[in-house]
Structures are given as structure tokens and as C-alpha cells.
Length: 185
Image (cartoon, rainbow, N blue to C red; front, side):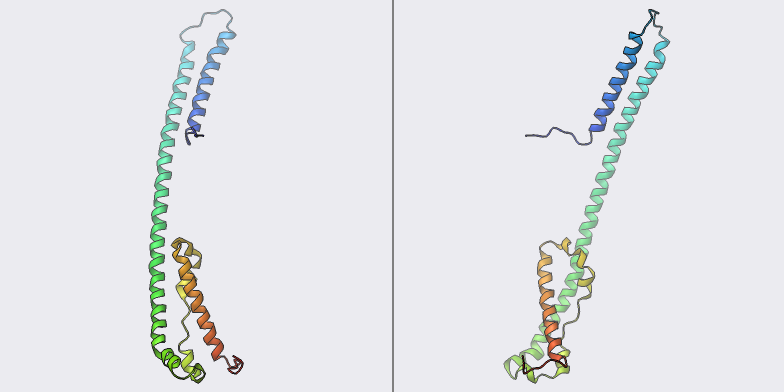
């Protein structure tokens, strides 16, 4: 089933219908109640003026409709461009923060984690040295959390990385807390 509606033209059709009905009523009422007096040409001056004024109003309404439609389209296009720029800026700044966090994780993997995985256990790592390896809190990620949906599917991977980084941070905090018992672990 096809839809033949022309969005935005409904006001134009209503105005045209109103103009046609108005003209018909103005012509038919005097004709129906005419007392037999002959209609003079001067009687039609008011009528023709009203018809011309109605036609001019209709033309002005159509021109205004096109102008408003063009303005709405321009605003939509500007909003799409602004959203695209916002998405680009968001991705760029999150990428910079993510690169720093990943680099820090890589450097921490090289030293001190590798030597403890290959040699003595984590039980022998000093608390101060272990606390130095706590990942920093992501500032930008938390500040723009409400806008992550702009990134589309990439937001899921970013959230998973930060979730795992948070788990690592929590585990290091647990290991270094005074109430943590290494015997019970």
C-alpha cells in the first residue's frame, strides 16, 4: 500500500479549500437572496478585492512555507555536522586518554610484573612498589560517560577495557590494604 500524502502540503490544500468555499459562498448567497435588482459592476469591486487579497495571502503562505522548510533543513544539516564534529572530538580525546592508559599498562607489564611472574610470587612484592602500579583513574572517560553512545559499537570495547582496568585497580587496592590477609587468599 503506497502513501500518497504529501507532508507539508496539507496547509496549502486547506487554504485552497477555504478560498474556494469562501468564493462560492460569497457568490451564491447574494445570488440566492437577490431581490431582482440588477447587480452593478461596482458591487463586484469588494468581491474581487477579497478574492485578490485571498490569492495573495495564499501565495504568501506558500512562499513562507518554502522559506521555513529551507530553514528547517539548514538547521538539521547544521545539527548533523555539529554532532559529527562532537563525535570526532570525543573519539579523539578518548583515544588520547586510552593510549596513555594502555601505555602505562604495557610499561608496568615489562617491569615489575614480568619479574614477579617469572620469579618470586606477588607475596614478596613490597606494598609501596605494588601501589605504584595502580592504574590511574580515567578522568575523561568518566566525564563523557553520558556521550559514549555517539561512538556506536566502539563504546562497548572501551567500556570493557575500563571495566577490566577497574578490576585490576580494585585487586591491587585489596592486596595492599592493611586488612587483606595473604594467607586466606
